[in-house]
Amino acid sequence: MRREIRSSLLDITKERLANFAVSKETRFQYFAVHGASLVGIALLFMTSLSYGARIVVGDKGYYYAPESILLIIKSGLLAAAAVALGAWYLRWLNRWLQRIADAEFRLQQFRLDIERASWLAETVLEWKSTSQEPFPELLASRLSAGLFQSSASETEDPRTPAAHLADALLGAASSVKLKLGEQELNLDRKGVRSLDD
Image 1: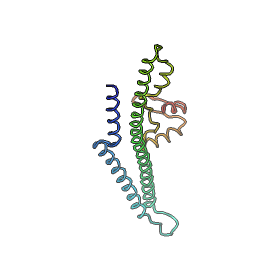
Image 2: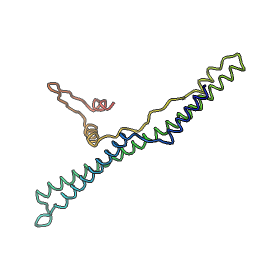
Image 3: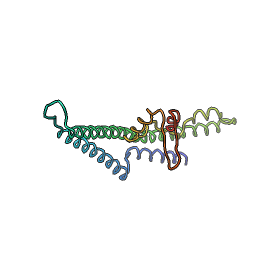
Image 4: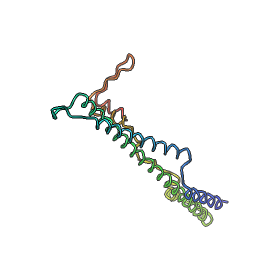
């Protein structure tokens, strides 16, 4: 009975490893994020370029007209937004691939754990059939250490460009004053750092 269960579990894990894939809904969301990110980056860059193409130098050749300065600011902001979105997109893609690899690794680890647990059970049963002494607890705990345990991935969550900007502003601030309705909250540098924890 025990060997049949082991065999069926190994067959299930082997089949899942052979057909390892995400669901249709997850795949749709994956492609939706790809599409939205790439379209957003392209639109931001194209708009930035179109503003940049309309910049003209003044009549005397050494100054910019006020309209051109406004176009330079708009073009620069849109280019910075495109770069920030691109950076977020690359981090998101890296995290996605890391999670897929982690899931596949956990499945492989589960398969190995089934083999280890089965070997340990066989060893304990063999011990009991040949000896009146109980199986050494220390040995059992050492042999079963880490069975069916998975460690959490250490990849950080992808943050939006707005979160990076807030971190940069709040991280550089020596104090922050927040007004929440009628209440006012003042935080020094130490208090601002404690908000991250």
